[in-house]
Structures are given as structure tokens and as C-alpha cells.
Length: 439
Image (cartoon, rainbow, N blue to C red; front, side):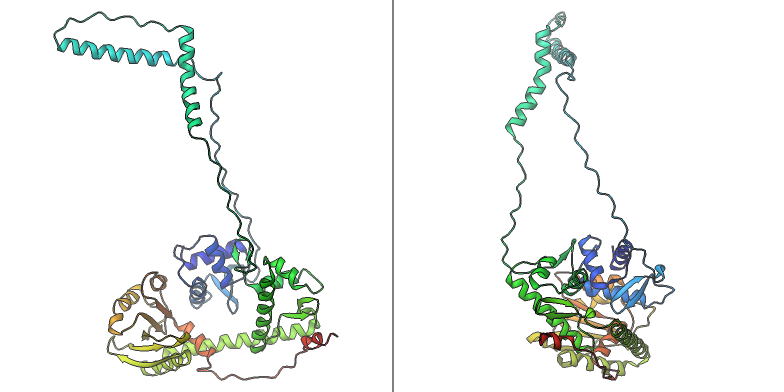
């Protein structure tokens, strides 16, 4: 399945709105994708967002909130998860015939046929040599003892074969010793975000939960796992505060608790409304940016992309004389993560109704030597076909990153290009402060 088909299948099975990360995890765990790629989460988010951008009349998906999608046919009322299909029944081997069921008279016709063939061969050889044919001898009927012996022969041969090759019991996999090093948080068969799993666990407990018990409920063991859990929940709270949101968890002396239970429901509801309004404003700003990008001339579009690349850590940019009038080619030096390697960049102006095909991706990959690069990036004001995205993620080939108009608008808003961030001071009760005092 493609990413779009897999997303439809996952949402149909789950029957609820899901984050793109969770949809991708389910699709990978259930083996729905014909090609996974290196970044299935980003690809899944981009595919669904591309379909949603086509409009409510043409898209089977609807965006509930940033990164969370549902099916449009639900009309805001998810039906709930469907019952999983029953496992296929294992075919039982037919029982071996017992001694009472085994035929005892089958050996006799077989022996008669063999004797007739032998007599025929002898007669043919005798006629060829000029010898006189001898009268055929009548086949003697075997005695009851001989018939019983012949009937028992196949069973004894089968028994001897089974004795020669005894059935080997499958080796049981030994569980590795617990090193206390957390690798994945698994709920069912798909990895789940630690913060989301913590929310589900804490909602089942009214009192704060100790870190040891919380780590055990998630599926982690060992002192290192507890330390990692504390660090992740603390970092998640700081990240939300930087985004102007209330932390979801509060650390008490007795353990972790949900912050929403420490304040009045009215405060929680007002903050949720403010957060939803901010998300709505962000979406409207991104749509406006995307609309204006499509109307910009190529020169202005190149200036915007160059500013974005510099914010991302690219520099030493040089133009490359390739492409047509609606394209601009350049080579940039990627210094992100301390590296220093060149990347080919192609800036395109494409209409929304004509997606970039896989041919453009493969042609750019084949021409990387003209840029002195080992990787490439295509930025367009339009969209990419599914085959183009799959071509860009082919393993064992030079990677080609794809940024469509919707992604570019979202990234520009994130780095404050084309938008002005207005900050509004919102007083919020700090439960963590009083918890630290022991009150």
C-alpha cells in the first residue's frame, strides 16, 4: 500500500482521530506499507497533509488539530475501533491410519503387476534372441502369513524413517538480561510516545504515581529507565512552556501527577480555548503564506528560500547554470550537525494541479556530479506525486529531500519568515512552585 492507502486502513481499523506519528507506527507494525523509507513519520504526515490541502470535497481526511487527522466521513463522530479479524485456523494434519484401517489386500495386486511386467520383459527378450516362448506360470496366491507381512511392511518402513529422523523441538529464544537501558516504549505492537503513554497511565490514578511504578507500567525496568523517564517528562514540560502551553505533568515528592488535576476545570478549559485559537491562527497564517508563495515570481521565491536555508544552517551558496525559466539551481554547504558536505538545491514554481513526478527526482539524482554534491533538495510551491516521494526515499541511492508548498509555508512560519509573532502575556497558576515548597 501507499502511505495514503495505509493511513485510510489504519484510521478505519482504529475508528478515532490519530496523530501522524501514531498512524505511521501502526502502518509499519501491521506491515501495510509497500515501501517504508527512512522517515515514515515525516512521509506519512506530508502525504496526509497533501491530500487535506486538496479541499474537503476531494480529501477523505480532515485535520482535527495540528498533526492529528481523522476521516471526513465520520463528521466529527468517530465510530470507535473495529474488532480485529479472527486469526486463520491452522490446518490439522490428517491422522495416520491405524493397523485396523490399513488395507491388507493391496499388496497382492501390486505384486501381480510386477510379475506380469517381468514375464513380459523376459518374453520380449526371448523372442528377440530367437528362443521359443515359454508358457506363462500362474501367479500363486500368497498365504495369509505373507499377506500380513506385506501389509505390515509400509508401516514398518514409515516407523523406521521416523526413528531415523526424530522431531526436534524448536529452540526457545532466551530473553536477554535486563540491562536497565530503555529502548522502546511499546503498547501492543507499535512504539508509542512516552508522554502520551504517561498521560493514559496517570488518568487511571487519582494520586501521584511513583517513578518506579510509572516506569513499570510503561514497560521499563531498572534505575537507568527511571532516570530517563524523569528526564523525558521534565524536558517535555519545558518544551511546552517555551511554546506557551501548560506542562502536562507535575513532579511531587511522591511521584508524577497530571497538571490538569491540580487546577480548576475553568482554567484548563480557558487555556485549551487559547491554545486552540493559537493553533487556528497558525494554520491560517500558513495558508496565507502558501497562497502568496504561489503568486511570487521566481526571483522573489529564490530570495525567500535562500533566507530559509540560511536559518537552517546552510551557507557557501553558489548558483548552478541548469534548468529552465521556472527553476533555479544552486549548490549549498550543509553545516548542520557539524558536517561539511554540499547539497544540490532546486527551487521550482509549480501549480498545485500538476504534481512533481518521479522523473524530476531521478534526473536530479543522476546529475549530482554537476553540483559536486552527494545529496539533493527540491523545493516547490506545488506538490509531489506519491511516486516522486517514494523515489526520493529509495535506499542505497543518494537521498533527495522534498519540500512542497505546504511544508515550506509551515517551515517559514516556524522560523518567523513571512510572519510576525505577537506575544500575549497569560497568567497561569504555577503548581510546580508550590509542590517544590512541600505545600
